[in-house]
Image 1 (cartoon, rainbow, N blue to C red):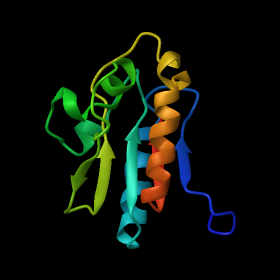
Image 2 (image 1 turned 90 degrees about the vertical axis):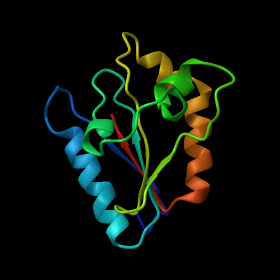
Image 3 (image 1 turned 90 degrees about the horizontal axis):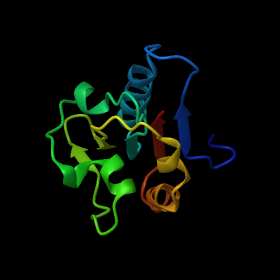
Image 4 (image 1 turned 180 degrees about the horizontal axis):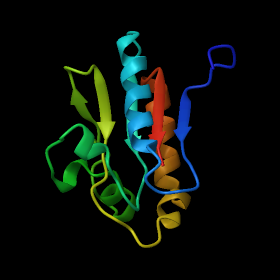
Length: 125
């Protein structure tokens, strides 16, 4: 990734409950411990888990799925976890048709914005 100046890591699999969120969280934490500025995005719009792993406070202003579904909501989605040296964008809602969220231009624009600020972006899908 360093050679190619790549910043985005996508963690995915074909099945449910295979540990994607755990792997994504541990990868993000490992990179953060190397003094890298890391953002972890919970893009699992069917069974989101990052908010549970890090026990983040719940509100609609810091919800990635809510941001992607609605106009006029702030793009200040990242929650800073100083103890872990990590920023997370959580999702708390299950969506019946998550492909709509991925194909929205808002997700692409959000990731492009983050890639200017962060060394790495880890996406849990």
